[in-house]
Image (tube, rainbow, N blue to C red; front, side, top):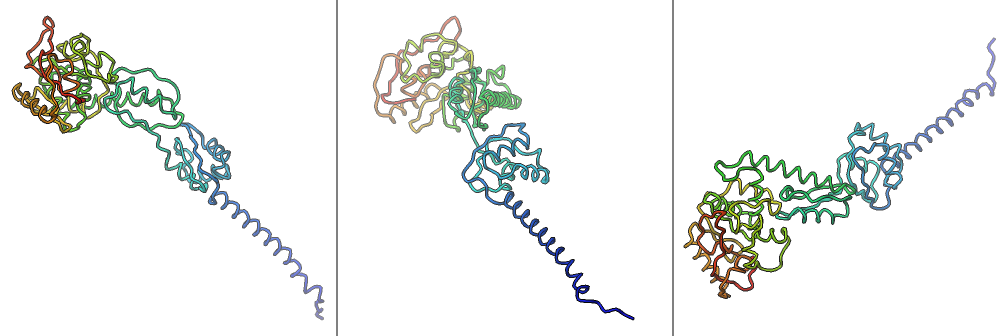
Length: 380
């Protein structure tokens, strides 16, 4: 005989489901809260302001994450490390100085470091600066640390170099010196045949003179050809920047050269020596090095300012004097004088170029010319 189920027996399954449903709802709520929490840690904006932080080479992902959290750039170092490892980039995070934008999320920050989007701190050494001047530029960079010694003249390659905030000045200087060595090695190996340059140092010395004689890129090969032709013919170079270097080691004089300075012997004064100076007189750029190692194919022995910011070149003394006459006409303000004291600095023409050059010897030093013109108010 079948027994009838009472009301209490019928309600028993429902009474078991209720706690399970509550438990499931609680677990779902916890999971939802966890997901919201994780989303907030990973994708929600964190840093309330711009933040600049520098990470040096060799910084571990743990140290990097902790620093970011301490600086309030990210919310959680734990999640940063976890996601960096999940993305397989934990060992590829790039050192440098980063400027993290206001409101960036943790994923934004992680992607920025993965991509190496660092603050570009740079220092520029202009062509034609001496090594002492280059070091002063380095010392003026507040983002660098430490002191450096002045390297040999001509050893630096003028260029723009990136650096990290807090990096040692010596490390940046080492890159400049390495760039200089690499550049001259590459260019020397491809030099034109038959140049009157015995060594790479000779090329740097002559390029340093070319660098100081013209600032026009298009003129460098032709200016280089003038000096190359003079070397081949045994004619003294007669370059004013070499005289200045012997006086001030390349620092501006702020005035014209005097006859006494032109006549005074120094190992750099190319009015008084038959060869190249004893050292470079500046740090030449790559373009000047290329010009010296691949000079223009000309017979030029002279050049003088042409009144337009460039130079007029000549192969003969007669042509040169015609160019000088044109220069005088262009300037229009001419004052005759009886010595060559101010020719080079004031007239834009080397004093030795106002007379027809002859091959010189050490036994018979060259003399400055005894007549010429002085162009007032003109700076070479």
